[in-house]
Image 1: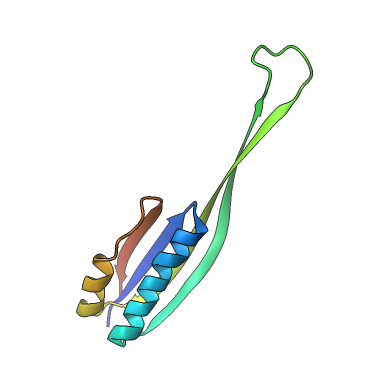
Image 2: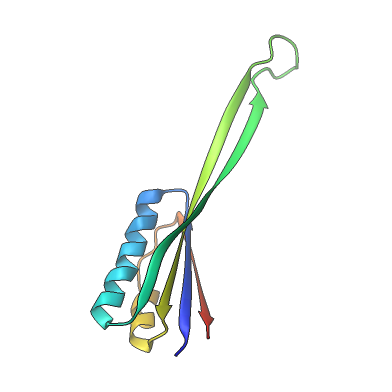
Length: 102
């Protein structure tokens, strides 16, 4: 049977876990096999900028960081389960990718 690989990514951990738990509940209700959610390494994007606009003065810096959290879920590609997964309300800050693999 085919599997669906679902990749979730977000800067907000709570909304990411919420979507992952909804997918988990659907898998339990429909009785399909599921592995995950597997936490993938968090990507940390750092940007360091000078506070001074003209380059004069003491060298003080602002440090900005953006963390992108990721989860991976493998689920059997049952038609009923996939239809329910497609109908999940996904928050704006969560990116979801569904890929069918054999």
